[in-house]
Length: 254
Image: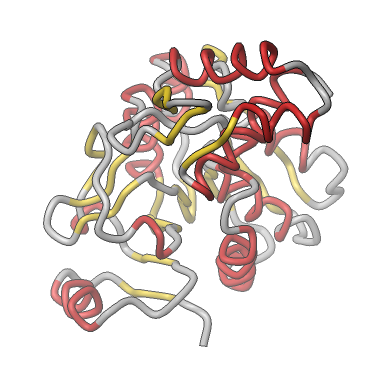
């Protein structure tokens, strides 16, 4: 196993269990305790963890985005449910935009049987996922590669996106607050998502229930900027009432 793969697994364990122990990790991965300490030190430097006696604990105050490979493996069932809902509402022949979120990768997987579909994306992962889909044309935005997110971001990405007008834009977020809107932890990603929303006739936020009631570093938009919310479970009455107030459709599994 590569060191980065081991660190990602340790980070995922931290996310789930909130604490890890050096001696236990050393035995599990069959490496020295010094190797595990170096792994934990990297997670501490990156802002994901805080050192503790004999191990580390999760940094609860961190607004740093998790590595893509960690995010992709979280709430898989919820992401698959949302992807199925999205796919059922995408018609053959449409032009759509997908952002570089882990949720969008599951959407791409669910769209592979569509016919005459054009997908514009800044996600390297989605480009690779759809290469063998005969009925799907993929347009990559270009931009600067962002380590850990498998995304192309920045002003060049915005310039390319502004030249398109699509039927539907699908984006995700790191937090969704009833009053303040929806958020991302990275400014370049947030800017690109705003541009994506402007390009879409229908603007769809695909967000799992764990993000409701959470804030992140930078605001992407508010309920006025979207037409639809797709989520994995029925939101509470307060959320549904707010959606009705702003004329936002809410789609979730029955």
